[in-house]
Image (cartoon, rainbow, N blue to C red; front, side, top):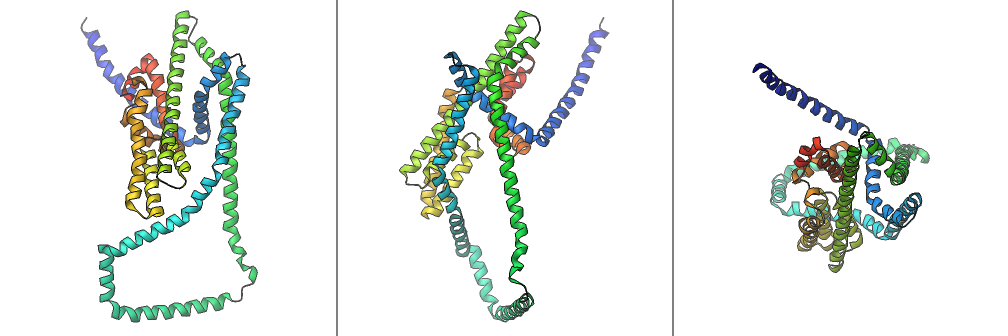
Length: 385
């Protein structure tokens, strides 16, 4: 009577020790598969998130007796038209910002080089140059003469080239043009795939939910519980995406207003960048604040102004993270900061820049599913605060 329970107890650790490595191998294999097939899964993940963001508006139109197909089509057209109009309206501001980049880089290099000359290391180099000036003059003169002889030889050897000899540079130029055209075609094809996926997800989301309820089995109680779980998961994901969109808009408008009052050029562009990068925790605000600090140093040649610009952007983002997001987002939807940071690192390795952008929403989706599936609730608690 005692041997059977003891044998069962001894079997549990063995089964657990086998299950843990299998799950670990499965997760590693899934990560490498997602990395390998990123061209397929990135548009799918992006389309799912956009459809969740637009679903409340489509449902509202459906309650107003607008057919779902028509409502989804109109809403998607408005979304695309608004995005295109925004890009067109900001083309001058963006062009000015890009045109100023070479000049900003040149001035930054000059400032760094002048700082290096005036610093201790620059003084050591000047002292070493003064000590070795006597021998270095002859050597440098000899090197200069040798360089002139080599240059003259090269000119004489190349003097017989025909004027059309410069056509050899057409190879790299044509390669750049081909790569640029290929990148534009790939981007346009992926945008088209995302648009159609969003359309189908908005139109047929109810169909797939009904099929998922039917798969739960013939028992009416199980079907009702499954439908409730799916409804709660959808609501939690939609609420999370809505909060991220609202907080991004608040950060963008606040940053634009503050920089405009400070007299910073291209304040609209920096406001949009702040709102977009606000969706990337930790890294996004640092990128925007660092960029504003560089602009302050280059544009105003004033370290204090650079600190003010970077400090304003960081203060707005911090207030949003400490006050606004906790007020709009319930405790159940909040995620542990360590989980968010590790998720950013892992997804940026898997999908690069797109992984960094999509990491937090995808972690929120996983947490929402785990919170409502009984066997996965421990994982949901591990991901939460």
